[in-house]
Length: 410
Image 1 (cartoon, rainbow, N blue to C red):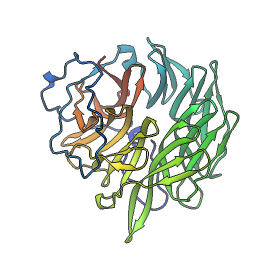
Image 2 (cartoon, one colour):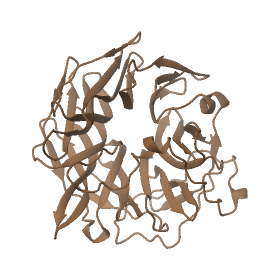
Image 3 (cartoon, rainbow, N blue to C red):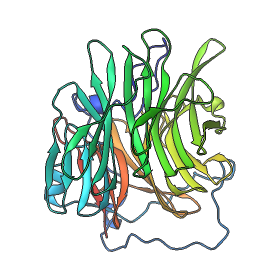
Image 4 (cartoon, one colour):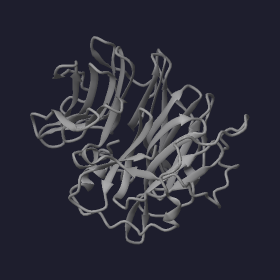
């Protein structure tokens, strides 16, 4: 979810991606957590009450966010080795003893410790995303910086023994080419998305596909100056990519969320809820494993409010998140879907003295809010299901600290 520098004379919206730069600057202290922390006890299981049949996802006109229940299911500190030795920005795993992390290095968690598996040979290499298809089939993507702003796509593959760079076509020769997210449904069906910036011209989307033999560039059916932030491959005939694009209305720069769908033959844009009255919006992450239950999250109104959208198999609908105080840099950065009544989204919200982490849970009818009881985080940036657990990572509230992991109490 890396937000590139915009070269089209338009100011890019504030979003989760500046978090990589945030590691190098002081993060303001977290707001003091309010509410009765005594309610946050580690006695409840991950499972949630089942709701009667027929309850669906209401649209924005039906949602009531004036009263938001506080979820009494706490996050628990992960094992010491998991926390202390972790420094990634994303991860992917097939089980609690088989997790890959990507960041400054590629590391592997065997259930007891993190071990460095790959160290970039060049300080100009930046890794952004990783996906494990099988124990001997792991991909990581990013970019290799060249002189100035120019860069090349970077793709690495783990075959069970070693990591190897794999070449892929460049969209903008001599310009900037960056891959920021990837997903796969099979060993011969991997998608990587990002953006490219030619030497002359606006930013453009970048989509690459692995068919088991080689990477090839896939073009959109319609050309636009959008950039992708996340991708989700369900099957070889059903993949999704989300992001945002810029346009100009009445002489003003406007950003709007974008969803693109792959049907096995071509990518096509689908209609998103119109957020023009809300100052536009950005989508940073997409989650879900079924064709009729997908969620995408981000920010709207110039980064002052949270954004969540739901796909029911036929259309995208706006699902209003709990109200938060307007600020510069409120967003939902990650989402994971366990079931129609079990959806988690994480991000951050601004406060009087800085940023604080934000966690919300969809129970099938409404959002529930969960505070972060550890007091360690300034923001939360990524969430994923690992085995029977949920893992979430973010940035600490103090400068110089490592990214950390929390898990939901079993």
